[in-house]
Length: 255
Image (cartoon, rainbow, N blue to C red; front, side, top):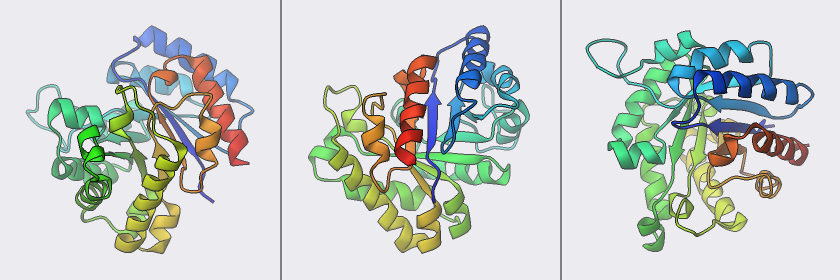
């Protein structure tokens, strides 16, 4: 059985002091929660502090991005080894904002996936179509390309151990909402392709998160879908109380 992974991506929010207070409160709130994997992705400046505060709690730590390079003259970049050393277990790769704002491609994301796995980090690989692609009926084509190219060269065992996050980019910040049926369609498509390209064991083991405006009032319905294995939470993950409500809702639905 796949354990739902509920991750809060803080993006460029929270100072070290704010992160410390958040993690201490969250760690206390989730001490009796079971049946879900809890992850937060602080900005790099707060990552080590958050990781230390999360020690001996059920809260795991993710980086928001990383370089594909091991080390070298790459000003401003952070390596997989640095994330690991700071206390990360996971790393978000290929987020829609990274693709749109910084020109990340499936090929560059693939290099990062390999580097993350080599450093024994668990990649959370983001995929999803834009509004233009959605309206053009290209959902399947876009997802196929992102999955095939982004996971190129991986074994079935490696694919089974990572997390894929489906972001309906067309429904984020556009005033449009993805319905549970649309989420289900995309997740089923992703799992079908994983089965075709990496085998049944990989497809059955790989967790597929939903990352489209997840909130306390919609998490239960999402987790109830057979191919939704968690959530990549944005704005609702910045407040510890709302993130806890999402965690609690997911745990309840997963039972």
